[in-house]
Image 1 (cartoon, rainbow, N blue to C red):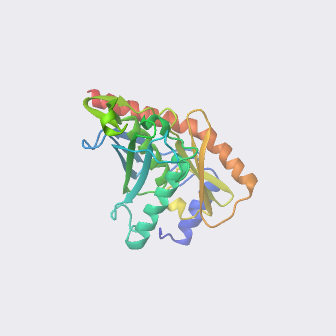
Image 2: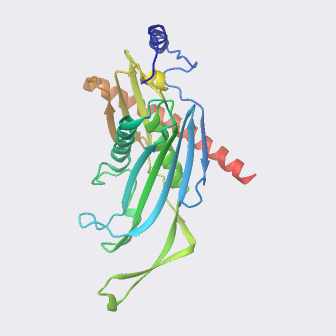
Image 3: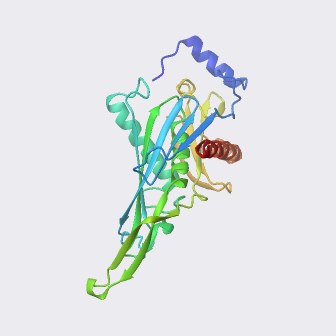
Length: 286
């Protein structure tokens, strides 16, 4: 928990009420965003995202597996988040484990539609190799390196960028009668297919402080929140998932309003993220 004096708390809440936050931003303004890709050579795809003083890393590892009986036409994706003990003073002991689990579940819900994969924002059918026989399993790992608020949005952005950096090995499949119809799979070491991330959403978290809500909250601002709603929105403005945290209840009309605001500001965030990716590619080409 961030330790603030009563004067500091009043300053933060008062600034948000007047649409002038402590760092000079308006309520619906994001911090500066930077992106790096290909930072983990052993992974199929990886990215580092910085939003202000918040820094996270996401990596993607692809392995050949077998589809589940319930979803023979879909591949599988798992998401796990770890928080570095040095990321923030409160990241210690049991609190660290609980936060890691909370972030993992929230990302699963917003990006995969829950444990079942139903309604997934990531197209699981694109991971199938042979229906009912072989598929790609994607293992997505997130790491919180430094925390100054808005971890969920930063991790989702890093995952989206890491997936765009992901190369899936090309697979040649042949059926052999001698193996009881099981496919023989030849994985290429030289040819890779780019993972399609056009449908992968970003997450916009609206944090409610007093009567107002803000985007991209810092740790100090989050310490003053009553509740927060995180909405995953794709590039077409479609809602892909929703999760809420904080003990205070919200009237349904407030939640609908927050969803509407999230949809509107998501397009601004997409522009910010695309600019950061373009800047990273320009640096890589130099």
